[in-house]
Every structure is written in C-alpha cells, then in structure tokens.
Image (spheres, each protein chain N blue to C red):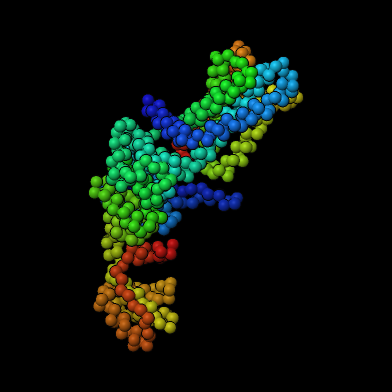
Amino acid sequence: MIETKGLRKSFRSRQGREKKSVDAVRGVDLVVAEGEIFGFLGPNGAGKTTTLRMLATLIEPDGGEANIAGVDLRTNPGEVRRRIGYVAQGGSTWDESTAREELVLHARMYGLSKAEAQQRAVRALAAFQLTEYADRKCKTYSGGQRRRVDIALGIIHEPKIVFLDEPTTGLDPQSRAHMWDEIRRLRAEGMTVFITTHYLDEADALCDRIAIMDHGEVVAEGTPAELKREISGDVVLVAIEGSAPEAAGKVLETEPYVTRLEATDDGGLRLYVNDGARDMPQILRALDAAGITLSSIELHRPSLDDVFLTKTGRSLRES
Amino acid sequence: MKFARDTWLIFQRQFLLLVRQPVWLFVGIFQPVMYLLLFAPLLKPALQASSNAEAYRIFVPGLLVLLAIFGGLFQGFGLIAELRAGVIERSRVTPVSRLALLLGRSLRDVVSLIAQAIIITLLALAFGLSVFIGDLLLAYLMLALIALMTSALSYGIALVVKSEDALAPLMNTIAQPVLLLSGILLPLNFAPGWLQGIADWNPFSWAVDGARALFAGDLGNDAVWQGLSVMAVITALAVVWAAREFARSVR
C-alpha cells in the first residue's frame, strides 16, 4: 500500500550567521501492507512527522521515491491526495465552527456533492459518537471529542490510507483507550492506518508492524513480537542494597548465562539472560556467595524499549 | 469549473464565519464615520471648496480607498489564527484548488469592504455628497481591486512570516508611507514637487486620483482608466504570488 525508497528531506536553519542544513530524514525505506496498522516509533525530533508530511504531500521530498496506494508521490501528488487522509498532531478544527460544518466542508473539498457530504457527515458523527455535539462550536469540545472530530475529518472521503500523527498525545488514559478502539475500527473497515507515536505501549498494543526511527533513519522494522524476539531471552533487573552496582557487575559478568549486562540510571543492573525463570536462582546464588545483598530483583519480558535501547544505545523513555 | 466551485466553497465558509461575528461591521464603520464627522468639517475651508458637497467629493473617495487598503492589509491576522488551528494544513491535504484557498478568502474581504463602502457612501449622501450611480459603481470596482490586492498580499505575507508579532509591524511599515504618499487625506496638489514626484511611484495614488475623478463625475478623465489598469495589474500579480504561497507553505 505504501512503498518508499531512500526518501529524504533536509531543512535549512540559521543559527546566528551560520546557515546550517539539518538532515531531518536521511533515506527511509518502508513497506506498509494493505489493511495493517503501521506504527512509526521514535523520540521527538526523530523525523517521524517529517516523513509523514512528505507521504501526505504536504512537503516535497529532497530525494527518493514513494508509491502510495498505487500512485507515484513525486509525479502525481494530486492523485495521492484523493486516496489518503491525514490527521495532524496539533488539531485541525476552527473554534467558531461546528463539527457538522467542518465535516461537510471537508467532504466537499474532496469534491463530494452537498447532499453526499451531509450524509457522510451524519454517518461520521454517529460513528465517532459526536452526534450529540454536532451543532455546537468546536471550542466547547473536550480534548478527546475534538480529536475524534479530527479523525472523522481525516477519513470523511473514505481514503485507502489514513496517516495519524501522534493521535493520542495529550489525551487522558480513558480517551486514549477509546482512540485505540477507533483506530482498530478503521482497520476493521479495511483501511490501512499509518500512525506515529512516541509511546511504547501504544506501538506494542496497537500496531501490527512498527518501524523504529531515530535521527532520521529507520533502525529496526518488524512486528512488535519479532523485534522483541531479536533480543533473545529475558531481562532481569537487579537493585543492590548499600554497595555500588560495580561489585555485583563484576560477579555477574563472568556467569555464562548472562548475555549482556549494563547499569541502569537508578543504580541497579540490567541483565539480559536466555531464560529468566531458570537463571534467576543462579543470579541469587552467585550474589549471595559474593556477600552482596539485593534489595529487589525483577524479571521482565523484553519490551520495545529494550529493542530501542539495543538499536540506539539510548532508552526511549529518556530521549 | 472545479476552481469556481472550490472558490465558492471557501468563500461560503469564510462568509458564514464573518456574519456570525457582526462586530467587524461596527468596527469597520465606526472609524470612517468618525472621519466623516470629525475630520471632514475641516476640509471645506482647508481645501477652499465652494461647498460641503465638493469637499466630500474629494474626501470620501480617499476615505474609501484608505478603508480598502487597511481592511485588506490586516486580514493576514485571521489567516495566522487559521494556520495555528491547523485549518490550512487540513485544507492542503485535500485536492482543493490552492488558488481557491486564497480567492475564497480574499473575495470575502472584498464583499465585506463593499458593504462598508455602501454604508459610508449612504451616510455621506446624507451629509450632502452627490455622485452618479454609474461612476459610483466603477469607483467600487476600483475599491474591490484594491481590497483584493491588499488582502492577497496580507495572506501571502502571513504565510511567509507565520506570526502575528512579525506581521503587525510589517503591515504598519507598509501602510504608513502608502497612506502618506497616496494623497488620501488631502490631495497631493498641495504637495511640493519632489513629494509629488515620489507619490507618482505609489500605485495607490493612481487609484485615489481615479476614484476622485469618478466621484467628480469626470468619467472621461485619464486618471480613471489609468487607476483601474494599474490596480488590475498589481492585483493579478499579488493574487498569483499569494496563491503560490498557499501551494507550498509549510505548516
């Protein structure tokens, strides 16, 4: 449904007198299949939004190719626009308009007749549980309601693909859960959904496949399960009482079942092991023999953050 | 066909939002009325006009041109608010004509200006102005061109600078010399030669001369077709440029 090759974009920025060129996106290759929820995961500034805006025809790529819903992005952006929907991060509604007015106008900007646009608006309002507020001004809506109007606008013309830029940023947990349901519903209706997110749990729970992006490049791509499987085994988090973690690190370094070991920010240790359940007692014994007392020990299945950490050397939570 | 439909679509939307906030009409009328009431009485002696009617015939067209220039130049502020709300970005992902995004808005500004101009003309008629209807309509055409041009310029500049903080001083900087060099408040016949020389390079001074000739009933005066032509050419350039900004502006 989407295929890109070497897509890139740099921006000129001025710092004092010096003009600098910043590579926002440095050659992105992606394949997104029809009917999946594809997630772009990465910290702020990784180039997710820039890539999305290029795919949505809002900015022109400096180089590379992209084919979207069977249309070449570079040579025929007008036709791409007809086939995609795009929902920006910062909202898209006008305070003084009502949801119904916005939906009808938007449908008509896609060339639908007035009657058809009105019917679509009624359906969209019902589907997004907005009928009750349809004729109130957008400025009276809650954050979650307003975001639902944004999504309804993005799909009013029944596109094949919809791009959602950080669809749940700024929403409370309940609205977020609702939004996930809405997004799954879009997929159930046969739409391909392309979202960006910097939430690990969102990428994990919602997306069929994800690409992890950092510094303008895709550093990993696959299903969440595949990516986590790449990090073989489990993660054991160990916190040491009193003494510094170095001593414990020295002891555990030499244990054969520990594949990787690193210090965490809060003074503990993160151990990568093949089989947590079997190896944990051995860790306890080894530390006990060295006279080191634990304050806590936890077993984790690897998370997408661990994937991010191994690919970029940083934790997504920190960046 | 699609372009005309798209323009109508954007115009309808913008017009509806405008009518919903009728305060603009009050603000738009209040200031010119103050000019009519508090400034115009000074004019008859200052211009050595033979009657109030003659003084109005000189002053009212200038006032209307002033209104058209300023009314248009400050429309960009509304667009910056729309940019911030994401309305422009939302429009730009649809296949809607980029020229329509501009023209729909600018035509709304033209219509609201003409509405103000009609009210002010009616008031001035009550004060003793007299003008032929045909000449008046041509003068309104001149005003419409000016409003279209200045609002298109304002939208284009708003898309480039993207911030009210930059737009406000920029527009004031443009508007002030334009105002002083157009002979709007007083005709430039009183100006020393060098000042008249500079004013000849101000397109709006051509517009003001043309509008004054029309209000004076002097349809055959060269100033009329010259003023209209100068305005038409610059308006076309402004519209093309601003529509391009709509096509390529980022966020």
